Image (cartoon, rainbow, N blue to C red; front, side, top):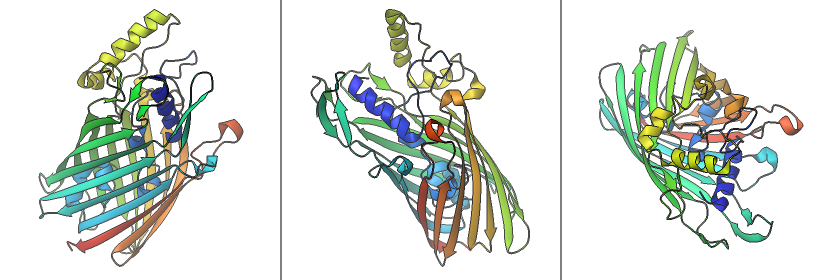
Length: 383
């Protein structure tokens, strides 16, 4: 990856809420860097209120973002979800945001089709060379669009598959460095399972397994050697719902995620050795990288992310949510509490979430005060 694009990708990592470098430092911090990190941002307000919990929660129109296999068990035959998240408002940014749309339609009682779109605007970025001379001003943006199909395997188990196109337009053309840049493109797929153990009243245990963003690398120049992995991920989720009475119920859930991208080799201080190691790392095939992510020499427990959340529902009209997200300090150190709420009006549900501020000064979480807004339009019902 060229210096200009690397600067922007590093900035994108900060926008997602993580910091780090390609090589491990003396304090063992070794962030796993990928292209298109916007795919790791929670896109919907309901999950955002539960610490980004969503793999095995009850299905809704946002299911294509998390676990497509949930869609055949949705109560509504068709639905559309629209979400908007102003990003890093706590840092004074006004032109960075994530917007998303998702929809599904159940063809019959056994199968469904879906689609989802994410658009991430990084605002205006001033490019400079190593001497600080201004080169150009760019307005990077990224988006993904996918189409999915899900099917019931039996009365409790379903499967979903999706194909996704990803476009990352960071820099285009020659910005004064002599290197010609282009938009990065990738194709990826998701495979997911969902087990609905809940009874007709909604009480019981559900679980899900998701393999997401399994796809090609992204390059920003014509040099085929300078391509980066996208954030392939393995997610496991479980949720349990307790029906208290006909008006009240509460759900609890836990998601565990692991990025299927190996950690970059640790720096030795020897330029030629480090360059050779990095070249070997970047030349690893996509499929091999998924396997290598489990044997890259790092502590595998440190690579896990956890989301713990709960949702209380009153008459299926008012919803209150809370959650906690955890990431190891050596892999990004994102830790935060979130709360959320929602209410239903006829065929529409409005959701919002809030990321509770934490830390102070240089330790303040850059995601503090993040708000997400979402609307779900339920077009018709199976009931």
